[in-house]
Image (cartoon, rainbow, N blue to C red; front, side, top):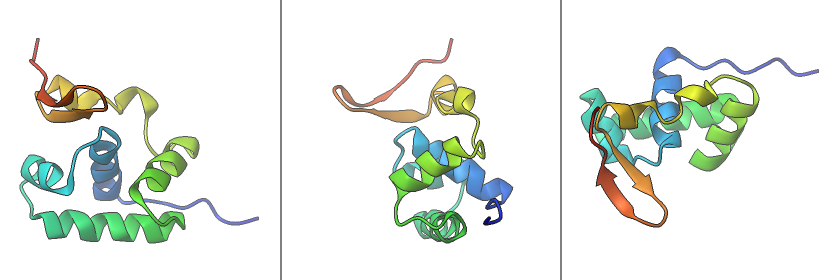
Amino acid sequence: MTARPTLTRRQREVLLLAANGNTNAQIARWLGVTPNSVAEVLAKAYRALGVADRAQAVAVSLRLELLDMDAVFLPAAFGLEVQHRHEGRQKLPVS
């Protein structure tokens, strides 16, 4: 049996934002870091999870309950741009 992977707080934070369809540049703006920093955090998360890409990392993190499914759309509540498959990027209003 393999040990359950662990992620740092920052890795979970970046994966949560990625789960909402945000690009590295959008995540970087949200967190006040560079896109390269976001890419580095994601790369470390991929290695920790044993996956090759963003979609796999989000899926594994949700399956292992490393990310809270109820929080996946949380950034939209703060007016962060989110990617919609059919509507393109849009900024959601804050209620």
